[in-house]
Length: 172
Image (cartoon, rainbow, N blue to C red; front, side):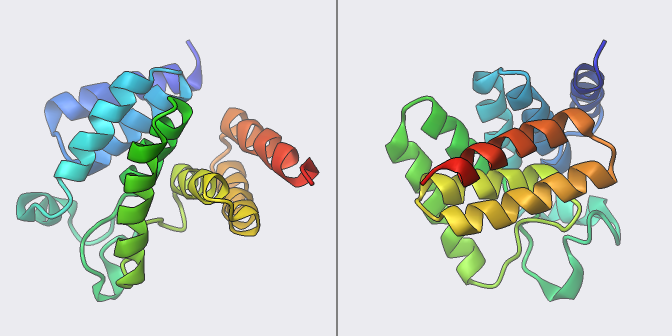
């Protein structure tokens, strides 16, 4: 069984034990990496539904990827970016760009969506920027995703991000 298959099982178990934005987000990322886009969309939507729920905020404690530091408003996961990327890949550009529009509005309010330790978040935001025609921004975020993946020894994911970076930088 591969690392990502075990991670999917772990997050599935976590969702059953304590459903929250964190567990749904990371379960969805693993499902997406395994090509199960329908399940990923459902779980990203569940993660998004938890965005402003007080019970979840209280359950986080004081330090989960530093998402609540600096007095930021609560919105810790870039679920909209990744869900938008899946819609884009499925050919539903209208739904994709609606997701991207929502996260741009959130970030324009000074709310940070991507933690410095979230390789999936940088990857999702990088893909979104690429789909929107912001090649330079995409490369910057994808390079960060690759760095974080290396830091956490996620070699398969690092390779996937590196391959995408090579593809994007080789385009004219």
